[in-house]
Amino acid sequence: MNKQITDSITYIGVDDKTIDLFESQYVVPNGISYNSYLIKDEKNLVMDTVDKRATDEWYKNLQDALNGEKLDYLVVSHLEPDHAYNIQMLCEKYPNMKIVGNQKIFAFIPQFFHIVNLEERKIVVGEGDTLSTGKHTFQFIMAPMVHWPEVMMTYESTNKILFAADAFGKFGTLDTDEDWTCEARRYYFNIVGKYGVQVQAVLNKAKTLDIKTICPLHGPILTENLDYYLNKYNTWSSYEPEDKGVTICYASIHGNTKEVAEKFADMLKKEGVDKVSLFDLARDDLAEAIEDAFRYDRLVLAASSYNADVFPPMNNFLHQLQGKNYQKRKIAIIENGTWAPSAGKKMLEVVQTMKDVTLCEPIITIRSRMNEKNIEELQLLAKELA
Image (cartoon, rainbow, N blue to C red; front, side, top):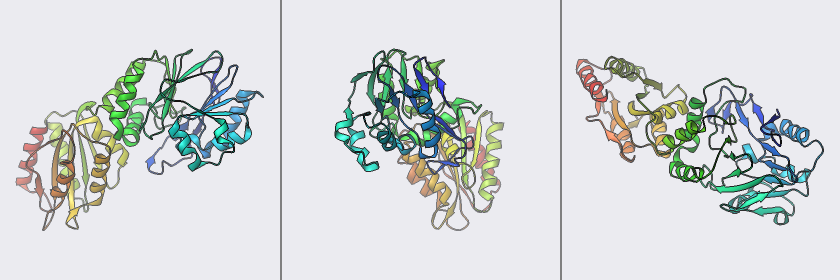
Protein backbone atom coordinates (compact mmCIF):
# COMPACT_ATOMS: atom_id res chain seq x y z
CA MET A 1 0.00 0.00 0.00
CA ASN A 2 1.83 3.10 -1.24
CA LYS A 3 0.58 6.53 -0.26
CA GLN A 4 2.08 9.91 -1.04
CA ILE A 5 2.75 11.98 2.07
CA THR A 6 4.40 14.70 -0.01
CA ASP A 7 5.58 14.78 -3.63
CA SER A 8 8.82 13.11 -2.56
CA ILE A 9 7.86 11.12 0.55
CA THR A 10 5.93 7.87 0.13
CA TYR A 11 4.39 5.57 2.73
CA ILE A 12 5.46 2.02 1.84
CA GLY A 13 4.27 0.19 4.96
CA VAL A 14 1.96 -2.80 5.29
CA ASP A 15 -1.26 -3.59 7.18
CA ASP A 16 -1.22 -6.96 8.94
CA LYS A 17 -4.76 -8.25 9.46
CA THR A 18 -3.78 -11.85 10.16
CA ILE A 19 -1.86 -11.33 13.41
CA ASP A 20 -3.60 -12.52 16.58
CA LEU A 21 -1.24 -11.31 19.33
CA PHE A 22 1.09 -8.34 18.93
CA GLU A 23 4.39 -9.05 20.70
CA SER A 24 2.83 -12.44 21.52
CA GLN A 25 0.71 -10.90 24.30
CA TYR A 26 -1.58 -8.07 23.13
CA VAL A 27 -4.88 -8.92 21.46
CA VAL A 28 -5.22 -6.90 18.24
CA PRO A 29 -8.69 -7.54 16.80
CA ASN A 30 -8.08 -4.95 14.08
CA GLY A 31 -4.52 -6.02 13.31
CA ILE A 32 -1.47 -3.77 13.25
CA SER A 33 0.37 -1.64 10.70
CA TYR A 34 4.11 -1.78 10.13
CA ASN A 35 5.06 1.66 8.87
CA SER A 36 8.00 2.42 6.58
CA TYR A 37 8.74 5.47 4.46
CA LEU A 38 10.71 6.23 1.30
CA ILE A 39 12.12 9.71 0.72
CA LYS A 40 13.20 10.30 -2.90
CA ASP A 41 15.79 12.99 -3.52
CA GLU A 42 19.27 13.32 -5.01
CA LYS A 43 19.95 10.46 -2.60
CA ASN A 44 17.09 8.06 -1.82
CA LEU A 45 16.44 7.13 1.79
CA VAL A 46 14.23 4.54 3.52
CA MET A 47 13.02 5.11 7.06
CA ASP A 48 12.92 1.64 8.68
CA THR A 49 11.85 -1.76 7.37
CA VAL A 50 8.98 -3.99 8.58
CA ASP A 51 8.20 -7.28 10.32
CA LYS A 52 9.00 -10.60 8.63
CA ARG A 53 5.25 -11.22 8.32
CA ALA A 54 5.09 -8.36 5.81
CA THR A 55 8.40 -8.73 3.96
CA ASP A 56 7.13 -9.57 0.48
CA GLU A 57 4.44 -6.89 0.31
CA TRP A 58 6.76 -4.26 1.78
CA TYR A 59 9.58 -5.01 -0.64
CA LYS A 60 7.18 -4.78 -3.57
CA ASN A 61 5.98 -1.42 -2.25
CA LEU A 62 9.57 -0.24 -2.05
CA GLN A 63 10.40 -1.43 -5.55
CA ASP A 64 7.29 0.20 -7.01
CA ALA A 65 8.10 3.49 -5.30
CA LEU A 66 11.78 3.46 -6.29
CA ASN A 67 10.81 2.71 -9.90
CA GLY A 68 14.25 1.38 -10.77
CA GLU A 69 16.28 3.97 -8.89
CA LYS A 70 19.01 3.02 -6.42
CA LEU A 71 18.70 3.19 -2.65
CA ASP A 72 21.37 5.21 -0.86
CA TYR A 73 20.42 5.19 2.83
CA LEU A 74 18.50 3.14 5.38
CA VAL A 75 17.75 4.96 8.64
CA VAL A 76 17.22 2.55 11.54
CA SER A 77 15.07 4.14 14.24
CA HIS A 78 14.47 1.04 16.32
CA LEU A 79 15.86 -2.49 16.17
CA GLU A 80 12.81 -4.37 17.42
CA PRO A 81 12.12 -7.08 14.82
CA ASP A 82 8.71 -5.73 13.79
CA HIS A 83 10.58 -2.76 12.30
CA ALA A 84 14.04 -4.10 11.60
CA TYR A 85 13.62 -7.66 10.35
CA ASN A 86 14.55 -6.81 6.76
CA ILE A 87 17.77 -4.88 7.37
CA GLN A 88 20.02 -7.69 6.19
CA MET A 89 17.88 -8.44 3.15
CA LEU A 90 17.97 -4.77 2.13
CA CYS A 91 21.76 -4.66 2.57
CA GLU A 92 22.10 -7.65 0.27
CA LYS A 93 19.79 -6.16 -2.36
CA TYR A 94 21.58 -2.78 -2.28
CA PRO A 95 25.29 -3.41 -1.57
CA ASN A 96 26.15 0.29 -1.82
CA MET A 97 23.44 1.41 0.60
CA LYS A 98 24.62 3.08 3.82
CA ILE A 99 23.02 2.34 7.20
CA VAL A 100 22.31 5.33 9.44
CA GLY A 101 21.98 4.77 13.16
CA ASN A 102 23.36 5.65 16.58
CA GLN A 103 26.06 3.83 18.54
CA LYS A 104 23.56 1.62 20.40
CA ILE A 105 21.94 0.56 17.13
CA PHE A 106 25.26 -0.55 15.71
CA ALA A 107 26.12 -2.33 18.96
CA PHE A 108 22.92 -4.37 18.67
CA ILE A 109 22.86 -5.03 14.90
CA PRO A 110 25.38 -7.93 15.06
CA GLN A 111 23.13 -9.64 17.60
CA PHE A 112 20.41 -9.86 14.94
CA PHE A 113 22.22 -9.90 11.58
CA HIS A 114 25.44 -10.76 9.81
CA ILE A 115 26.04 -7.80 7.50
CA VAL A 116 29.09 -7.93 5.28
CA ASN A 117 31.34 -4.88 5.58
CA LEU A 118 29.16 -3.31 8.27
CA GLU A 119 31.97 -1.02 9.42
CA GLU A 120 32.32 0.47 5.92
CA ARG A 121 28.57 0.85 5.49
CA LYS A 122 27.56 2.49 8.73
CA ILE A 123 27.00 6.18 9.38
CA VAL A 124 26.96 6.81 13.14
CA VAL A 125 24.86 9.77 14.29
CA GLY A 126 24.26 11.37 17.66
CA GLU A 127 21.97 13.96 19.22
CA GLY A 128 21.38 16.86 16.81
CA ASP A 129 23.46 15.47 13.95
CA THR A 130 22.09 16.01 10.45
CA LEU A 131 22.11 14.24 7.10
CA SER A 132 21.25 15.87 3.78
CA THR A 133 19.91 13.93 0.80
CA GLY A 134 19.66 17.04 -1.40
CA LYS A 135 16.46 18.98 -0.78
CA HIS A 136 15.79 17.18 2.48
CA THR A 137 17.72 17.56 5.73
CA PHE A 138 17.27 15.03 8.53
CA GLN A 139 18.05 15.85 12.15
CA PHE A 140 18.46 12.96 14.60
CA ILE A 141 16.93 13.00 18.08
CA MET A 142 17.95 10.38 20.60
CA ALA A 143 15.03 8.78 22.46
CA PRO A 144 16.61 6.15 24.72
CA MET A 145 14.17 3.80 26.49
CA VAL A 146 11.18 4.90 24.43
CA HIS A 147 11.02 1.97 24.69
CA TRP A 148 14.40 0.32 23.88
CA PRO A 149 17.77 1.94 24.66
CA GLU A 150 18.75 2.44 21.01
CA VAL A 151 15.62 4.28 19.84
CA MET A 152 15.96 7.53 17.94
CA MET A 153 13.57 9.84 16.13
CA THR A 154 14.24 11.84 12.99
CA TYR A 155 13.04 15.34 12.12
CA GLU A 156 12.81 16.22 8.42
CA SER A 157 13.04 20.00 8.33
CA THR A 158 11.90 20.70 4.75
CA ASN A 159 8.38 19.35 5.31
CA LYS A 160 8.52 19.62 9.11
CA ILE A 161 7.89 15.90 9.64
CA LEU A 162 8.77 14.01 12.83
CA PHE A 163 9.48 10.32 12.20
CA ALA A 164 8.62 9.29 15.74
CA ALA A 165 9.64 5.60 16.00
CA ASP A 166 7.16 3.79 18.29
CA ALA A 167 5.92 7.01 19.89
CA PHE A 168 2.41 8.16 18.89
CA GLY A 169 1.66 4.67 17.58
CA LYS A 170 -1.48 2.62 18.06
CA PHE A 171 -2.88 -0.83 17.49
CA GLY A 172 -5.05 -1.39 14.41
CA THR A 173 -4.43 -1.27 10.67
CA LEU A 174 -4.50 2.02 8.77
CA ASP A 175 -7.85 1.23 7.16
CA THR A 176 -9.49 0.54 10.54
CA ASP A 177 -12.21 3.07 11.31
CA GLU A 178 -11.80 3.59 15.05
CA ASP A 179 -11.00 6.28 17.58
CA TRP A 180 -7.26 6.94 17.81
CA THR A 181 -7.20 7.61 21.54
CA CYS A 182 -8.49 4.30 22.88
CA GLU A 183 -6.09 2.03 21.02
CA ALA A 184 -3.21 4.50 21.30
CA ARG A 185 -3.74 4.59 25.07
CA ARG A 186 -3.79 0.78 25.33
CA TYR A 187 -0.66 0.68 23.17
CA TYR A 188 1.13 3.38 25.17
CA PHE A 189 0.57 2.10 28.70
CA ASN A 190 1.23 -1.53 27.91
CA ILE A 191 4.34 -1.00 25.77
CA VAL A 192 5.87 2.34 26.73
CA GLY A 193 4.20 3.01 30.10
CA LYS A 194 7.18 2.25 32.31
CA TYR A 195 9.26 4.96 30.68
CA GLY A 196 7.33 8.13 31.45
CA VAL A 197 10.44 10.09 32.46
CA GLN A 198 12.12 9.26 29.16
CA VAL A 199 8.99 10.18 27.17
CA GLN A 200 8.87 13.52 28.98
CA ALA A 201 12.47 14.16 27.95
CA VAL A 202 11.64 13.54 24.29
CA LEU A 203 8.53 15.73 24.49
CA ASN A 204 10.72 18.57 25.76
CA LYS A 205 12.94 18.14 22.71
CA ALA A 206 9.86 18.12 20.46
CA LYS A 207 8.80 21.50 21.85
CA THR A 208 11.81 23.07 20.13
CA LEU A 209 10.74 21.77 16.69
CA ASP A 210 8.18 23.11 14.24
CA ILE A 211 6.23 19.87 13.61
CA LYS A 212 3.49 19.71 10.98
CA THR A 213 3.25 15.92 10.59
CA ILE A 214 4.02 12.95 12.85
CA CYS A 215 4.92 9.65 11.16
CA PRO A 216 4.97 6.81 13.71
CA LEU A 217 6.05 3.22 13.12
CA HIS A 218 2.54 1.92 13.92
CA GLY A 219 -0.80 3.54 13.26
CA PRO A 220 -1.95 6.50 11.18
CA ILE A 221 0.12 9.45 10.03
CA LEU A 222 -0.94 12.44 12.14
CA THR A 223 -1.40 15.71 10.28
CA GLU A 224 -4.09 17.70 12.10
CA ASN A 225 -4.61 18.97 15.65
CA LEU A 226 -1.14 17.78 16.71
CA ASP A 227 -1.48 19.53 20.07
CA TYR A 228 -4.16 16.97 20.97
CA TYR A 229 -1.75 14.05 20.52
CA LEU A 230 1.14 15.85 22.20
CA ASN A 231 -1.07 16.73 25.18
CA LYS A 232 -2.25 13.14 25.50
CA TYR A 233 1.35 11.95 25.59
CA ASN A 234 2.20 14.61 28.15
CA THR A 235 -0.65 13.45 30.41
CA TRP A 236 0.14 9.77 29.98
CA SER A 237 3.89 10.10 30.48
CA SER A 238 3.49 12.25 33.59
CA TYR A 239 1.21 9.55 35.08
CA GLU A 240 -1.59 12.02 35.71
CA PRO A 241 -5.13 10.60 35.51
CA GLU A 242 -6.73 11.38 32.20
CA ASP A 243 -10.34 11.27 33.45
CA LYS A 244 -12.24 11.07 36.71
CA GLY A 245 -13.64 7.59 37.17
CA VAL A 246 -13.24 4.26 38.93
CA THR A 247 -11.75 1.07 37.53
CA ILE A 248 -12.77 -2.11 39.37
CA CYS A 249 -10.58 -5.14 38.72
CA TYR A 250 -11.59 -8.44 40.31
CA ALA A 251 -10.18 -11.95 40.43
CA SER A 252 -12.90 -14.39 41.45
CA ILE A 253 -12.60 -18.18 41.70
CA HIS A 254 -16.21 -19.32 42.14
CA GLY A 255 -18.12 -16.11 41.47
CA ASN A 256 -18.58 -14.72 44.98
CA THR A 257 -15.94 -12.01 44.57
CA LYS A 258 -17.45 -11.23 41.20
CA GLU A 259 -20.82 -10.60 42.91
CA VAL A 260 -19.12 -8.19 45.31
CA ALA A 261 -17.43 -6.29 42.46
CA GLU A 262 -20.64 -5.99 40.45
CA LYS A 263 -22.59 -4.87 43.54
CA PHE A 264 -19.92 -2.27 44.29
CA ALA A 265 -20.02 -0.98 40.72
CA ASP A 266 -23.77 -0.38 41.09
CA MET A 267 -23.20 1.41 44.40
CA LEU A 268 -20.69 3.76 42.81
CA LYS A 269 -23.06 4.60 39.98
CA LYS A 270 -25.83 5.36 42.50
CA GLU A 271 -23.39 7.63 44.32
CA GLY A 272 -22.97 9.63 41.11
CA VAL A 273 -19.77 8.21 39.64
CA ASP A 274 -20.35 8.54 35.89
CA LYS A 275 -17.45 6.41 34.68
CA VAL A 276 -17.08 2.96 36.21
CA SER A 277 -15.23 0.24 34.32
CA LEU A 278 -15.33 -3.38 35.49
CA PHE A 279 -12.83 -6.11 34.59
CA ASP A 280 -12.79 -9.84 35.25
CA LEU A 281 -9.03 -10.41 35.39
CA ALA A 282 -9.44 -14.12 34.71
CA ARG A 283 -11.28 -13.52 31.42
CA ASP A 284 -11.07 -9.95 30.15
CA ASP A 285 -8.21 -8.42 28.16
CA LEU A 286 -5.46 -7.63 30.65
CA ALA A 287 -4.12 -4.85 28.42
CA GLU A 288 -7.51 -3.07 28.54
CA ALA A 289 -7.62 -3.40 32.33
CA ILE A 290 -4.17 -1.78 32.53
CA GLU A 291 -5.30 0.93 30.12
CA ASP A 292 -8.30 1.89 32.26
CA ALA A 293 -6.33 1.64 35.50
CA PHE A 294 -4.10 4.39 34.13
CA ARG A 295 -6.93 6.33 32.51
CA TYR A 296 -9.00 6.88 35.66
CA ASP A 297 -8.04 8.37 39.01
CA ARG A 298 -9.40 5.61 41.28
CA LEU A 299 -8.81 1.86 41.32
CA VAL A 300 -10.56 -0.92 43.25
CA LEU A 301 -8.86 -4.28 43.65
CA ALA A 302 -11.07 -7.23 44.63
CA ALA A 303 -9.61 -10.74 44.85
CA SER A 304 -9.99 -14.16 46.37
CA SER A 305 -7.31 -15.67 48.57
CA TYR A 306 -5.42 -18.59 47.06
CA ASN A 307 -2.68 -20.80 48.52
CA ALA A 308 -2.08 -18.31 51.35
CA ASP A 309 -1.54 -15.68 48.67
CA VAL A 310 -3.80 -13.95 46.14
CA PHE A 311 -5.60 -15.52 43.17
CA PRO A 312 -3.00 -15.51 40.33
CA PRO A 313 -4.90 -13.30 37.83
CA MET A 314 -4.78 -10.47 40.39
CA ASN A 315 -1.16 -11.18 41.23
CA ASN A 316 -0.27 -10.91 37.53
CA PHE A 317 -2.26 -7.71 37.10
CA LEU A 318 -0.65 -6.01 40.09
CA HIS A 319 2.86 -6.89 39.03
CA GLN A 320 2.10 -5.63 35.53
CA LEU A 321 0.97 -2.30 37.02
CA GLN A 322 4.02 -2.20 39.27
CA GLY A 323 6.33 -2.82 36.31
CA LYS A 324 4.69 0.02 34.38
CA ASN A 325 5.26 2.56 37.18
CA TYR A 326 1.63 2.85 38.29
CA GLN A 327 1.26 5.89 40.56
CA LYS A 328 -0.74 8.99 41.57
CA ARG A 329 -4.01 7.12 42.15
CA LYS A 330 -6.45 6.34 44.96
CA ILE A 331 -6.76 2.60 45.60
CA ALA A 332 -9.25 0.50 47.60
CA ILE A 333 -8.79 -3.19 48.41
CA ILE A 334 -11.42 -5.87 48.92
CA GLU A 335 -10.36 -9.41 49.84
CA ASN A 336 -12.23 -12.68 50.08
CA GLY A 337 -11.32 -15.82 52.00
CA THR A 338 -13.23 -18.65 53.64
CA TRP A 339 -10.86 -19.61 56.48
CA ALA A 340 -7.65 -17.54 56.30
CA PRO A 341 -7.98 -14.46 54.08
CA SER A 342 -4.57 -13.58 52.62
CA ALA A 343 -5.40 -11.66 49.44
CA GLY A 344 -5.62 -8.25 51.10
CA LYS A 345 -2.19 -8.50 52.70
CA LYS A 346 -0.59 -9.65 49.44
CA MET A 347 -2.26 -6.94 47.36
CA LEU A 348 -1.25 -4.33 49.92
CA GLU A 349 2.39 -5.41 49.74
CA VAL A 350 2.48 -4.54 46.04
CA VAL A 351 0.41 -1.35 46.36
CA GLN A 352 2.76 -0.03 49.04
CA THR A 353 5.65 -0.11 46.53
CA MET A 354 3.83 2.35 44.25
CA LYS A 355 4.51 6.11 44.28
CA ASP A 356 1.99 8.72 45.42
CA VAL A 357 -0.80 6.23 46.06
CA THR A 358 -3.58 7.00 48.54
CA LEU A 359 -5.02 3.87 50.16
CA CYS A 360 -8.62 3.72 51.30
CA GLU A 361 -8.76 2.13 54.74
CA PRO A 362 -9.68 -0.30 56.09
CA ILE A 363 -9.33 -3.22 53.68
CA ILE A 364 -12.75 -4.85 53.38
CA THR A 365 -12.79 -8.58 54.13
CA ILE A 366 -15.47 -10.88 52.71
CA ARG A 367 -15.86 -14.30 54.32
CA SER A 368 -16.96 -16.48 51.38
CA ARG A 369 -20.08 -14.47 50.52
CA MET A 370 -20.95 -10.89 51.38
CA ASN A 371 -23.34 -10.33 54.27
CA GLU A 372 -25.26 -7.32 55.54
CA LYS A 373 -22.22 -5.98 57.42
CA ASN A 374 -20.16 -6.20 54.23
CA ILE A 375 -22.84 -4.34 52.29
CA GLU A 376 -22.70 -1.52 54.85
CA GLU A 377 -18.88 -1.44 54.58
CA LEU A 378 -19.08 -1.35 50.80
CA GLN A 379 -21.61 1.47 50.93
CA LEU A 380 -19.28 3.54 53.09
CA LEU A 381 -16.39 2.84 50.70
CA ALA A 382 -18.55 3.85 47.73
CA LYS A 383 -19.32 7.17 49.41
CA GLU A 384 -15.63 7.74 50.09
CA LEU A 385 -14.60 6.98 46.53
CA ALA A 386 -17.42 9.05 45.07
